[in-house]
Amino acid sequence: MSSNTASPALIASNGDSLREAFGKSLSSLADEFPKLVVLDADIAGGTGVHHFRKSHPERFVQFGIAEQNMMAAAGGMAAVGLMPVVTTFAVFCLRAIEQARLSLCYARRNAKIVASHPGLDVGPDGGSAQALEDLAAFRAIPGMTVISPADAIEMAQATRAILEFDGPVYMRTGRSPSVRLFGADHKFEIGKGQILRDGHDLTIIACGAEVARALDAADALKEDGISARVVNMPTIKPIDMDLIARCARETGAIVTAEDHNIHGGLGGAVAESLAATVPCPVEFVGVKDVFGASGEPEELAYAFEIAAPFIVAAARKVLKRKK
Amino acid sequence: MNIQVKPTPANDTGTAQKIEQQLAEAARFVRMHSIASIYHAGSGHPGGAMSSADLLACLYGAEMNVWPRGIDDPMRDRFVLSKGHAAPALYAVGAYYGFCSPKESLKLRKLNSPFQGHPHVLDLPWVETSTGSLGQGFSVAIGMALGLKIQNNPARVYTMLGDGELQEGEVWEAAMSGAHHKLDTLTAVIDYNKLQSDNTNDAIMRLEPLGDKWRAFGWDVQEIDGHDIAAILAAFRHAGTTSLPSVIIAHTVKGKGVPYMENIPAWHGSVKFTRLQAEEALAALNASADEIKEFLDV
Image (cartoon, rainbow over all chains, first blue to last red; front, side, top):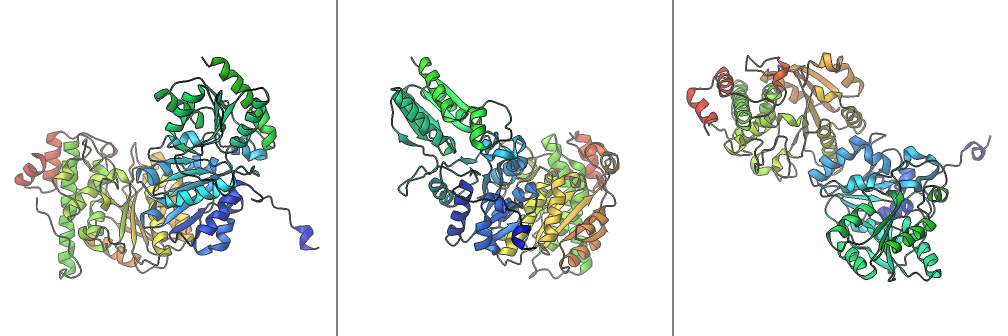
């Protein structure tokens, strides 16, 4: 029997996904950041860090399927001068969130958590695997920076940025092939959002996989004569309050869009920011406080109402509420 | 308070017997200071502070290569108090050997005091990391030993766990990783006083056969009397020679040194001492009338 027919086709990280972009970036940055070590819990093939394992095996540390120990051990490695990057699926980061709280954030360690498989983007693995709570949960920890880049270029830039940043960070990657949004001239900066398309009737503020859908929604609105501004908001915490206030002043209505529960994530952060600066009507596109399910990511985006047409509907709704 | 300068290899010319006497005196101070700080705080966990006093005195007074002036030295040995609720004993041993002020550290659990109810590294760098959630300190110690090894730094890492703490699943994740990564520079000490918050270990969740569990996880296991200074020092010496990560299961008495507390689970929890109880405890520890005044009237 030939080994070709005996080997299963492994479904691992490939193509233009954010996890691949992250894994490749980490590998290419390793020489520039000699204290960088990468921690894995038996899913390097899924998180993209198989690239790093291959390029820098001596700085790749295997913890087995034991995320709590891995997370707290990262605190110890940071305490002795290394810069650990903890990698696992977003849902398993939730399992070790108390370790992230005490041993990374409370002790203010320069350690990074990079989570693949966030939200409905996980797809067929189903509801148990789809973390729809991670942005809210990690955002609530004092001292934690929370980031969710939108495409592979931004992911590469954000990977460098979190290694240059001194302090704990939680960053989402993504499992599915991502839409290419930015060119090499894109400039990611922690704490800053960017206006991708200008408009004056309302602003759609999105992060991660929802940014591409927000741009599609703005196209559809334009055909109906509605001018929608689109903002990419890759840093959920600290959120870009100045830009949010400016959008509220200039467009008077906001729609948020995220592959996450509508409670506590990007929408929550934007609403908190508006309440303290320039209050205006807001509609929230996200998963409506339910768990996900199996299906392809695009099917799920429709089933759970986070696809572009639902951003369009939210835009129409928020315009009716606009004074 | 009669505070000692920690002996260094250069000035340590004592005989074994003299060293043991000095460490016993350090342990007595740890117990008295812990009683006093918990009395002033109005809350705190005295039982585990009493049971761990001899072990902590041996670590800071003899075993570890760490001195107050070298707390930033990358080559220093590290200690992580994984059973963070024994913080009063850690502050007391730190006070005895010059890592913090003996008077300031009596302001335990007070607003604006760095001596929080559980150790916090941003308040007190010499405590090495923040603990108080059981299991995590052990993992942090694993990470330190692994990180030092990756950087070819020969410094040793020590950690102390409570027995109830061993019920946390994370402890066994960490134990597995310590053996897998061959962390021979790591020594874990278990303050095995057989009591936990609500009752005995046996009544809450049985730990035995404890030595067999650690051996099965790939650790070098020693079982000793955790109040026998010579036995503690010998166990640390052996731990430094084995090629495996090392665990010292130290059989101790909760509340050791204070008869009304010994082996009574109620003295584990956060308790409030009356003046009379604090005086009685200090007297049981052979405190003089002057010492009692010095500890309690600050």
